[in-house]
Image (tube, rainbow, N blue to C red; front, side):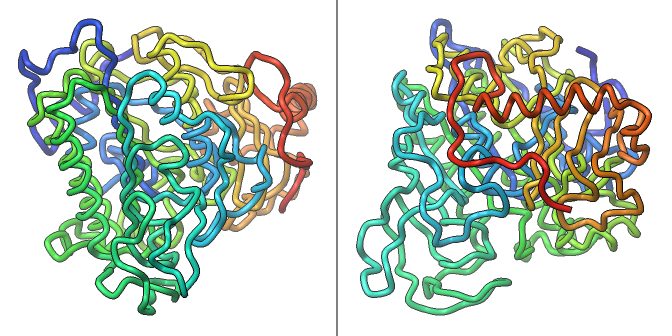
Length: 486
């Protein structure tokens, strides 16, 4: 571990001090609060991108001084739905039948009813569990003639005691809030935010971020009177399109609406941090702040870069791509008394690691048919700076694979695998040294065929075994093609 010396003194908000009442409770399990941004790039967090980042993120920066920054964290996919599946199940989503693309607001549930999830595991060990935000993992919505009927297969059937949020992305109908298993207001109108579809008459996209934030703050406040530990999963719908910062944030960044929306998203994090402080629970809470994938080109990345802001920092690509800009994401963890403040960890981790980490906190063993791609990062949080993963698998929107082991990254195809232009290199595979070439510009596949063969064999085994962690082989939900996409 090393102290974040280059950024000392540059934070834009004061460090909130923890008082004696906030110290970890001896013998109790920590509360866990997981804040997941939507399309927030690694370089959008100022303290992670000091040279090429122009958006102020004082609360994320403050959190970094209080916790640990992971500089090589990856989402399970470079797009929304599959990453969210992996966070909650500890399994790569490409093992399901969703092997490219994402779900929409009316899709059926992706998580099987009998699959162990993070909230189910925590429930079994005495936790209260709440989900507030964008679900985007499918649910069975009532048809237009029965809008007051219960919503089936939603978050409260997959381990959460309570749910408040929206079914999918902010630009996907139905545009309506859901509480537990009912609409709070039936989508009887028609509205459009990028896409057009059913909407609750009182629903407005600009209200979503403050409404989710307020619900999260209120939930934390209610938990303060209960000795039962809690898990709050807070998947925000920002700064994903539609890019709709509230009036008080418009013009704040000086970089346009996207920069303003990032700043408002950072404000939401600050509200959660303040709520934990006010409730006296910050000292016994593992707080994680991260994103589901890289920044979307829809943010207007070309214009942002001309203004000096690079959402992917020094990496190549953006959301949807197999290059690291698509899936290397901000990841900051604060756990007072366990994780040393102001430190950084360069070990490779994946968002699928939450399930095994929770099992480690609970000191329980996962069954073989759960968390097949989840590795506990508990040792890293405790300061043991050592490799934990054999490898991490990356996946793009069109189904292109990559395998990262140590410094080597092998992409099983040519081009971006997503929305970025492919470039001039038409080689059938791409091999990069991520230490020397973070921008993925020097393809070494011809110079190192042994590495290509070794990593290919490893990837084929991770597919055929149905898992990437030790344990009994498991079945994938369908046939998986290693080489797919252009």
